[in-house]
Image 1 (tube, rainbow over the protein chains, first blue to last red):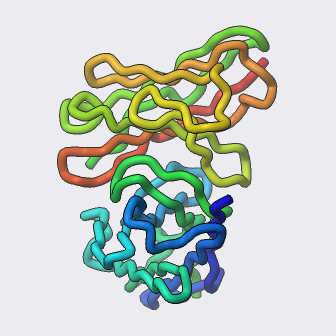
Image 2: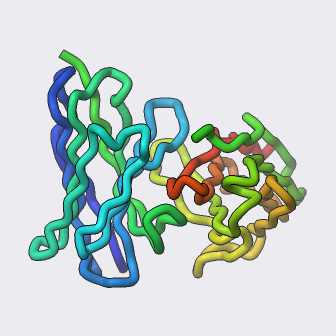
Amino acid sequence: QLQLQESGPGLVKPSETLSLTCTVSGGSISSSSYYWGWIRQPPGKGLEWIGSIHYSGSTYYNPSLKSRVTISVHTSKNQFSLKLSSVTAADTAVYYCARGNSPYNWFDPWGQGILVTVSS
Amino acid sequence: QSALTQPASVSGSPGQSITISCTGTSSDVGGYNHVSWYQQHPGKAPKLMIYDVSNRPSGVSNRFSGSKSGNTASLTISGLQAEDEAEYYCASYTSSSTLVFGGGTKLTVL
């Protein structure tokens, strides 16, 4: 079945750029029916949608993060990625990647998540 | 976009039914049939339980059901089991073309 796996540094310094990759296995990221999203969860807090991308390259971002977020798709590698610039301690969270039926509706399945801590 | 409003906690005994509410506005929950519910056990990724208000993904128990009235969506779990103890989040499409989540509800099975 479809599986997603996040990867990247677990520690990022303040003001630097957070970079994560999501690898999709058991299915093609190039399916026109689906979108690929990033969602984060600060420790002990709720979920926040960051943004989504279609394999065609169309992107959809949360307005509250839009100025700092870039999501890209890499079809040859069956991967998509997240870059979040100018990070602060408030960006410390577990970052999840997931498959969506639309840019901003339901997501299933999700990756296991990766904790990224912003600290010097 | 403000988070959707959920009760911080609910509880019930095994075999009972509980309902978790999710209140938004006419710009999100009330305006669209795009409400979803997720179950999250500690240290695990969220799992989709209900999509588009009342649809269950394949493999999700029929003890889980969803509904909506006005600006409030609800998740009902019948025949509570110990394994249902988890955090539950609702989410909704919004008129600003974004996705907003609720603050989460901790379900305790007594």
